[in-house]
Amino acid sequence: MACESLRGFLKQLEAEGELRRISAPVATELEITEVADREMKKPGGGQALLFEQPTVNGKPSPFPLAINTYGSEKRMAMVLGRATVQDAAAELNKLVKAKPPSSLGEAFKLLGAALDLRHAKPKKVKSGPCKEVVHRFDGKPSSTLNPQLSTLLNFPIQQCWPQDAGRFLTLPCVVTHDPDTGDRNLGLYRMQVFDEQTTALHWQLQKVAARHGRRYYEKGERMPVSVFLGGDPVYAFCACAPLPDGLDELLLAGWLRQKSVPLVKCETNDIEVPADADIVLEGYVDPTEPLREEGPFGDHTGYYTLPEPYPAFHLTAITHRKDAIYPSTIVGQPPMEDFYLGGASVRLFLPILKMNFPELVDLALPAEGAFHNLVFVSIKKTYPMQAYKIMHGLWGAGQMMFAKYIIVVDEDVDVHNTSEVLFRLGACTDPQRDALFSRGPADVLDHATTDIAIGTKLGLDATHKLPGESGFHREWPPIIEMDKAVKNKVDDLLAGL
Image (cartoon, rainbow, N blue to C red):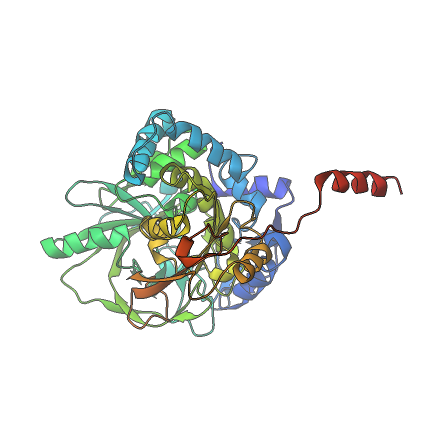
């Protein structure tokens, strides 16, 4: 169900024992990261944390900071408004199965139509809580209630790791529009703070916002951009969901909320943002100015992303709730909070992948793979070379193009159990016969590729081999398993002891 505010969601978490308040002052410079990292590394992801007195350069910020709000299976289910993430996936599966699609593209097109029909289309409103405090930088009158809270430097924006280039917004929902079609995109791109009114926008070259930006650069026109933080936590989840270009993430948010997202027009540009957001940053990117060096930044790869040129975002206004809470996250060596965000995305969209790949049983992104580095896939194998068909298909499916290693196993393997997958990898492969090398786009954040954004992929077929498959001419042995009747008898025996 819809959450009307981030503060309301935190109250729900607290009622469920999923939130811990920290009342002592804690520095946004490194210290909050260390506390949060220890919490995220606990079994099951620990608790969400609310820092009631985060400090900026030693001074208390008027805004509390919430972190690790997505960092457990239970909290992700609460974000999606369901008892479990699987419940949301099952509902989505019913929506898009009304008419079997003939391709993955058609499946996503059908998804967009289905979401639009299910009270998901955003609705326009005149105002909302995100307008309670308004400060403009464009010289026009401002309704600022608190003049001292007028710049980025007053928010508890973290310096996460020792070698970070500065402070970074890590959960900003960035709204852009295609200048040709008007299509909206909602993306999650980190933002390095340069000064009180300027940040970087780290949209990587394969991202939709980067495509929007290239069109504005080609046209030589100033690009309007707005960024919001907080509000219903489902917004940030949808911002990082692997939706195809052109499908509005706010449709998905409305469907998950079971209530349309209320949108209000910004003060200094025509972009609309959720009226229930906690903080809104309005501004523009100027295509006539040079790119600025962004980074280093301690990234989800577990290593620092080195400096690269990215566009500068110039603020024209900041608006926020009077009681705004600043949402944040950190990334680094896994497992971290983003593991649960990524896992929920996989499960939510797995039914759509299965429409195009009917043999697909399950898919997992283990924490050790830092998202794209490692993918485990189980299939119901019925013909030779089927594992290779899945590898090629996944490498051509949206953000799966970034997958470095794909390991394909049989349907009886639990891909969420890394030990099981590695056992089959060792037991069921001949390295030369069962390995497939390919090349393609790579994650811009991957420091190991020879060239930026271009890399090698490796697929490994750890399924049972069929007669004649890949030159295999032996009989495949059965796996060792105990008779089910004996298992049941021993269960009864042990229960009676």
